[in-house]
Image (cartoon, rainbow, N blue to C red; front, side, top):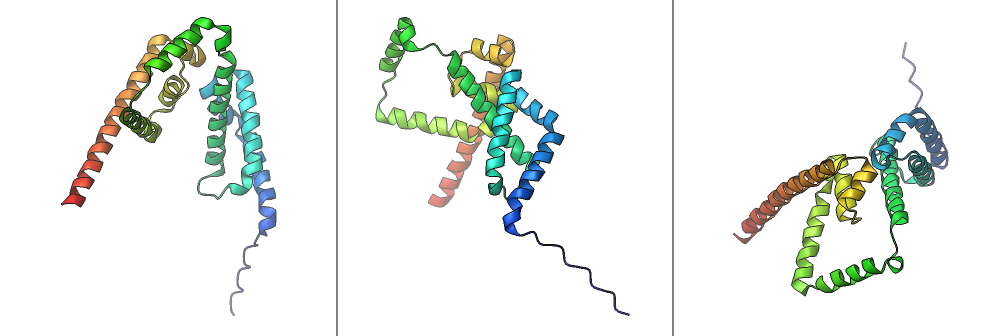
Length: 205
C-alpha cells in the first residue's frame, strides 16, 4: 500500500510577511529586552538615553522590517540597529553639551587660529583623506569599547577628559584604549598596504 504523500508546507502570501515579521520582532524585543538594554548601555551609560535609544531603534526596525532579508538572524539585525541608534543618541548628547562659539569668544578665536594654520596644499589634503579612509576601513577590527572611544575622540572631537566622563572611565583607561586602537589600526593598515603593493607588482610583471 502506497504511503500517502506528506502535505506541502503552507506558503505564506508575501503580503502577510511584514505583519508576521512585526509580530516576530515584537516578541523578540520583549523576550530579549534585557539583552538589548545591555547593548545600548554599553554605548550610553545613561538610563534615560538608553530608553530613548531603544525606543528609536524599535520604531526604526518596525518601519524597516520589510527590508529584512534574513541574511542574518532577526536578533543580529535588531542589535545592529540598536547599537547605531545608541551611537546617534550619544552624538546628540554631546552636541547638547557643546558651548556655542558666540557664547565663548576665546573658543572662537582659537578655532579661527586652528583654521588658518590648517590650510594644506592639495597633495596634503588628498594624502590626509586617504589616511582617514584607510582608518575607517579597518575600524571594525577594533574591540567594541576601543572603537567607541576611538570614534568619540577622532570623529566627534571629544577630549580625553570628556570621553572619560561619558564612558565612566579613568583618564589613563581612555588613553590606553586610544593607544591600543592606534596600534591595531597601524598594524592592519601596514599589512593591507604591503598586500596591495605585492598585488600591484605582480600585475606589472
